[in-house]
Image (cartoon, rainbow, N blue to C red):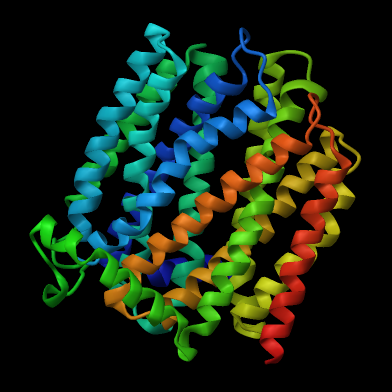
Length: 420
């Protein structure tokens, strides 16, 4: 298989191997942590979960860092990215352990969310840093392939982490706190793995590094405006369009996720354990879609161009998601999860490639942090829209139609841009 051959070539780069190890462990821990938190919020037997409650939880965890997210990029363009991975994962291991203790103590939800918020806050730095560091460990010729395999491998690791969390909760220990501690252990492993990378390897260049935090924060507004101007310049206009398209596709993904959570909780299963099992299966099938995207995207993006491949992904989702979603049955739901994974990850790989290849190294941290903020805002906005449109059992024809129309609008917009 071409993907196996490409992976073998990339693994010859020592820096890529070590960065990939950090990504796999870190995002695997993310999957464990997120499933543990979701299981507590959505599938606890004593809770009567609603779409509004899910949307509120997403807003509490994501929106505050949509405000401060741009600061992450400014700091990533000054801090050693290797150090971000080391200290960031150590801090997440600590906070995940604290969250496990809070789950055992049955504290008020707001206190639990504050602790979980700390984990997601650091995640902003780590994920943006992983994307910004990738061009430092592979050459330009292999950047598209690396962009296909590395983030997709991370997504698959998160999916595997989610599967591990389901296994621990359903088979070993019916305890969300125990699952949290597994995630904490994986975060600790990611921190230790980062020590194998030289401090200087991942950048940024020494001329751009500012060691004093106050100096970095003072120039944040000026630097962010410079980053926006850098992105808006004609050579990078395709990156701006790709970011806008990916944000809308993330909106669709978020809305579908809330609907799937509600369907698994109420409409398609009769017990919480059955709901968790169906959700775990849906996550696994979606992960298979991510893998297929990693195999197909390098070829498709090379043949069509990354922008046209985004258009194909959005157009395919516009047709297939309503066809598979409107029956509101388990079989079509799983098929829809595969399509959602394939099209979303395929478009993301293309977007990452466009941004990385057209943005200068000194701006990548800022641009990827803005990228992350757009993801969060779109995701929370989607959850809010879903909360307004979903009935208690999760079946909503208007929501599925809205998602299909949004995908179609993205495809049409990318067609017009590519023609220009």
